[in-house]
Length: 243
Image 1 (tube, one colour):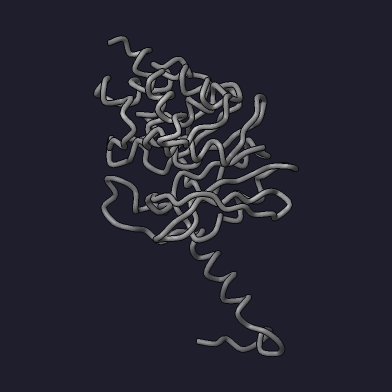
Image 2 (cartoon, one colour):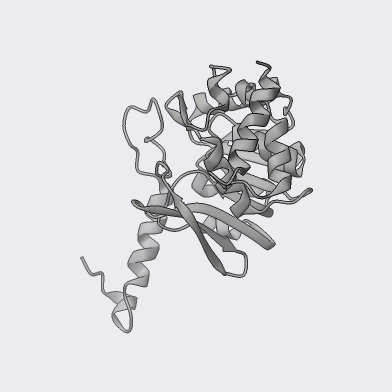
């Protein structure tokens, strides 16, 4: 069977009432155009609604990609940041939705970044920028962004990402540890909750695939100091260090 037929069958299955996870026509058209087999080794299995694992990272199931993108609600011309690009499939669908040069992506694992770049190039989306970065810091050189998608779970969106949202922007991330649900945070502070999901946690330096050990980062030190300062109130804030 032709891979294009398998791709159409995949999209039809996501739209069908038995799953009912795909309602946005633009997302459906984008997923119909992206050759998912370019991101998964097994051509036929690529179009089954299940996850795959590559280089220690997950290739999200198509139904999960639908949840993310419909919650994100991107529109053509939006500037988008993907945190945790994985092998690049979600970034490719976003490239169809907003234009490939409007998609920026980061991942903390260098082998995954190389894989995503190669996959996107082979699939025809070489204009997507993919860089090796600590995702919690975002990509300030290209900010502000209209949409930020975090493909990793966290109890709260990192402040640098919120600061990189443009006016009217939206950030979507898996909220919590277990259970998790998708949450959208708009630039004005409004939040909206969506369905239940299950993602790996947002990593810091030293936790990525192939790392020998976890290294404490300057970001963690700053966050710890900020929480410590906020926990003190009144006269003791100025001169007493509580240990």
